Amino acid sequence: MSIPKKYHTYILLGAVLIVGLAVGMLFGNHVVEAASSHSPNDKKILVIYTGGTIGMVNTPDGLKNKPGEGTEQLDKYLSLYPHYRDKIGKYDILSYDPLLDSSNMDPGDWNKMIKTIRDNYSNYDAFLIMHGTDTMAYTASALSFALKGLGKPVVVTGAQEPLAKLRNDGINNLICSLIYCSRSDAMHEVVLIFDNLVFRGNRSKKLSPNKNTAFGSPNFPPVGKFGIDFEYNIFVNQDTRTPTTKYQRLWQYQQGAFEPTLYHKGLNIIVVTLTPGINFDHYTEMVESGNKVNAFVLQTFGIGNGPDGNKSFQHFLHTCNATNIPVYNISQCSQGRVEQGDYATGSFLSKMKVVPGSDMTLEAAFTKACFLASIYPNSPDQQRTMFQRDMVGEITSAGMNDFELFIPLQA
Image (cartoon, rainbow, N blue to C red; front, top):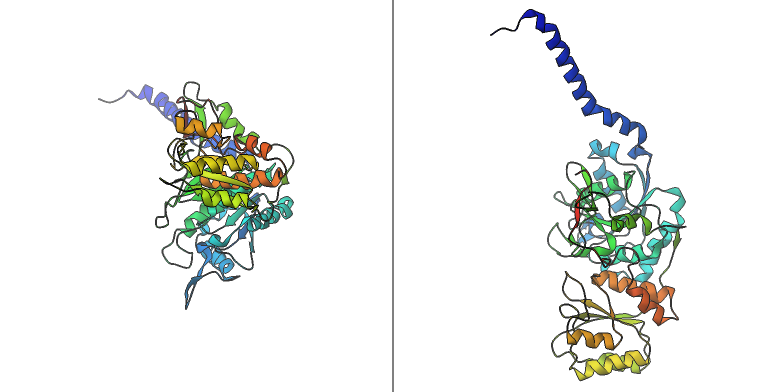
């Protein structure tokens, strides 16, 4: 059946209108966005190469860090991916000498990174730290506490396989990190990027020494993820689909002037993992003999329970109270939180002034104890008080419920 000629003009005009609307829908928003946003190439990034697997090179003795050669590897491999150049800002590379295996790092090395960021803060828009994976989560947590008033993104990344190997995960982690640093909406806090996922630094934890999915965040979902494009995840109310106060606080943690804090030298934070029948006499003698101990972090059973019938444990806690040494409580379980009042064995710890650490990771609890001992060296009571508070997103705040979900920002 043919359409009468008198309708042809109307059909043509309608088709033109539909095409015009489609083009507007497809490209109109992009034109506005391009006009109002900054190009990634406007960003200046300082890449701080501390050492680690990602920049190791082949030697007769196996893979090793060599000053300078890791920097050359970085430039060499990035040049193989020119199609990412429009998504990555300008970067400079600062290589530490000597380079460090992260297993050898201590709070003095955290201070070196803090000073590097502090001294270069006004010259760069973002900072990317290339780091060994073994203690990467400790460094990410330590920096999150120390960089008070942070107004720029700080990314920590590394690799399970070095760039020098043909098949490696380092190049993807590096490119994702540089792209994130170059985004105008990169969050002003410390994050850890690994295997396409962006984790809040003080919630991250190394889960595997063998897999490329080496890191996780047991009690806090990833902040974002890289697929074909990058997507943020945010806390939203399931009904109104608007950001909750909890998400808005992500931006409020770092208010005020940038005032980084250095960790004190010679800190002695002792981590004790409880086991059935553990004897605490050694730790009690350590305290009674006058050895400097700033705090103990206990990794307890389940929901935060300890052996209340263990005489050596009782004596240890009494000794810590008598000498005013803080004792903190986190769970051995990777997920969940400490609730000291649920069982008698947990209530016993509360009576003994043991401070619950909620759902902090070991890495966050340890570095937070170091941080509090550094800023309140003469006030153990203040250390105990602040340990329970959510300072930089390391603790899930009370009141979070099942209606607060993590969903893509664009959803």
